[in-house]
Length: 192
Image 1: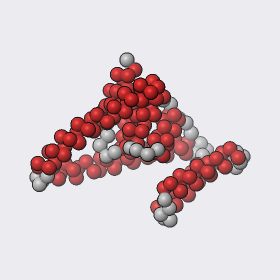
Image 2: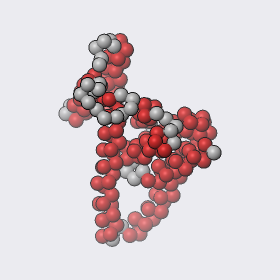
Image 3: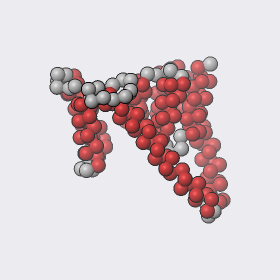
Image 4: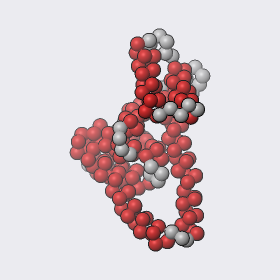
């Protein structure tokens, strides 16, 4: 039964994650944290971080990691297949339709209408993860007292390095991880 639930959950994610892995984050969160309490919000954030760091699409990586967490290797295979199957079928159908009807105004209008929705889904996922990173494991409402100011400083420095200094994301992730290790384990009194 768990295999069917994993397949169906990630089939839905694969079917409705228009815009890629980041747009799928709210869908994945809804399925694995809220609908089926397979993971806590903290575990979900950890899996999303690992899925982002490993090579490959975020949604497929997260399907594999969630499947392993829930039902071992067979669960990983089932969840990954569920995530990939809708994309394979849809891409083949849409490629044929686009090739055949690409000059129509209606097709261009549909594509233009999807762009803002994708941006909103990515922003929603980003804000959920930011809230979790700055406020603890529950990701609840933030007050100034509950904000993790060390995490906020690492976030601000990382954002500045990425947007202003144009530093490679690999170096930013490595530096942020090193800062986290130093500030939270080596110098735990400095964090907080």
